[in-house]
Length: 276
Length: 229
Image (cartoon, rainbow over all chains, first blue to last red):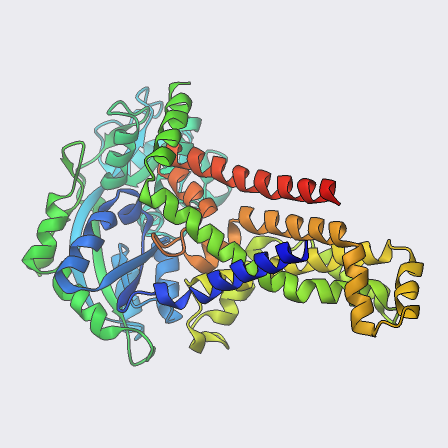
């Protein structure tokens, strides 16, 4: 019995001591949004970057709001996010530097094929107004993410306020795919980026219970950017590695990886770093 | 119905083919939980003995506080630890956020009250004559304490297992402190949360089964040791 305890403790200590040896020599810590992770894009980008630059990319997938917060707290080296207005403010306030646009896709409004509010083919503002007037169930991220920020902006432009207390408006506080799944269970409408929708389509083997009803509106553009965390505010961040990543992902090579990324034969993100 | 069946088949497949992502999450879970439970026991058992054995003013209040901490929600632990180890926080220099030791600290805080409280109960429940007999045999205080704990070893072991079960099954701390980073801090529970969110049921089921297997193994061990005694 005593021997057994001694054995347990030594195993534990061995595992504890083995800890430092596993750390990679060079790695970059990124905070990003759930859409880049859920779709699998980062699973392709990270190995390609490691191969090109010899730097390991580690990421934590949170909403854009939380990602910016992690950047403010100096907890990550770089951000890959999609809420342009918030990003610009982040840079203006001195939290971030070297913001570069990387790629875009678009947002779409999806809902049940029966389309109770009759929004199919409408422009986004009229669609939201119709959802409001029919009091059709709308599922919101409600998590301060890039998609949520976009959604709130669209409601505002449609002149609709006080959503928080509406019975037909529910807020999940979860990631994009989770939110689509909730909308599916409740037969509701939701706003999603197209990349995550294609992933959802793939999960359902091409026959998803919710379908795209509104798309192609200029207001629905979804721009992703990278921002390095400001080394002047956060001396510990790996600014040189962050710059290498920004250089790589905006280079032809990095942009090609993004453009070549496909699910079910569909392109999820359009690289646009060169357009600036 | 089909997707549930597909999930199970996929799960078995992942485990049999030694899918690296699945095994990485299992290994990370083992490393974090072993680290946290070791330090929890090293500190928790002596503290539990002190709390259970000695009478001192304020003991009852302290006991109530420890018992209250048994209900500590993991997200609260996660939040507190984050506030302290974020680069902006007082221990930011150590760079513990998004690391295995960082998560282990959170789990240590979660598990410590469990071990202290259950060990204290075990000692309190023991016949006081045991300790006195040991003392009259000429044992020092430290020797007597160790001998008493040895007498109550099954209750202490049960405390350890309870704490371990809590640690391997928690998700809040691992998610908030670890950040669910692939190949590094993605544990069984955070992977299940993520994979389910992505609609990948197979990996969730496979990992869930492994987690239950761990718990089953730990409990079998305890009942085996108890039977041998």
